[in-house]
Image (tube, rainbow, N blue to C red; front, side, top):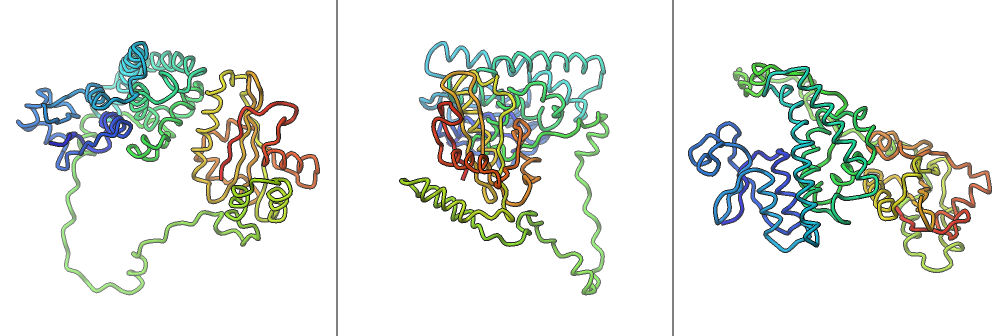
Length: 412
């Protein structure tokens, strides 16, 4: 029998098992007929979990309930690195799983329940939960200042469970005004949810702009109650104009697609960049300026605002990789080079970006939170010094501005 998870699809506790399964090469089927409040009250379900909580994993050897236990089971089905590579790693994975459950999930749930209509709102209780959550975020932020992941240098089960426990917080109650106090937690969360195995299960994640109001149990029940279908009326012939009004509207185009055509074909430049292996200055750099269209494109320098925090090389490199990953939404309209500079800490992060249009696209500013972590300056191509700096960044010249390059990453 295959592994079957009994849950609704968009359940952050179910996400734990599915993401662990992606990392571990395990197949789990989602129960197709699950209905919350019905299935989990049935005699068959209560045999698997007498409390009726969700999710439950049905296995050939019996059922497992409690989401962390299910995720642990999935992580142990194969010899994977989800528990680290040593006994102390295993202990640290378990330590962070407990932390994420008791210090994060518990307090987030306390704030969320009255907003979903599952409990009575008490201002003093919520105030205490907020204070505890800030303390936990401060502790986590301090740890992540010098660590990309919770244990070791790759994703473990601790990262999976902690990120899933943060998920409802970021999407419902943790606005930017709260999380901006903890930049390392922000960086960590967005890095994890944009990993391919996370994104495959969770999809695109957007941070909430506002905290939802408290609901009474009656309001929650009314909102959850299916709306009756409208009674069918005798069909009447529709006039042609009405039919046109009801036709589906075409998907709105990206504003950049509406700009006048440019003589610069971005894909041609990217191919030239990728295929030039020798005489880079004479071929690629010259080709870039031959193609460049200052009316259709603009060049921008960026400098990371918090270079004094870049004290660990691999953390800095992962920070830049995460930024490039989140910039994927602009791949059709941009080319970028990111340089990590210095032979010792603190490392400097500087970049060069080519964008379609005369300004940084608004949808990039709106969707990629990393943008505000950098100072942006438009390149003046009439200034030969700035133009030469563009050349040096495109070709990864070393030393760059008198310093060694730790790494250079390209977005194309």
